[in-house]
Image (cartoon, rainbow, N blue to C red):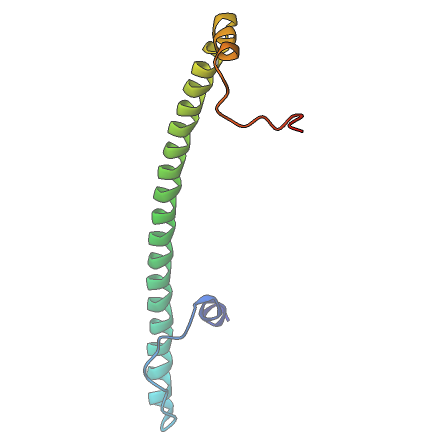
Amino acid sequence: MALQEMQALLPSPQLGAIPDAKSPETNAQNSNNSKAAKVESAIEYIKQLKQEVSERDDLINKKDQEMDALKKELAALKRTGSEAATPEAAAQLKAEPSSSPNTENET
């Protein structure tokens, strides 16, 4: 029962041999080989999943580091932008002609 459940969890059966129904002794031997093959398949599949999880964790950590760096960069830009919003800077911006077209009352 447990082997059947384990086999159902595996992505695809990787058994190359089809059991031969010639003798009870051969059936017992194939059954043992089949059980061992299922367990070996499960072990390989678990190793593969662990590797995929490890790779995904590494990628997530890398993306988290990139996100932190971008947050710091954004905070620095906001600080720089707020420093430029002092009264002197605002007066200087008003005195400079706008390079963007004025969309208000152009008729």
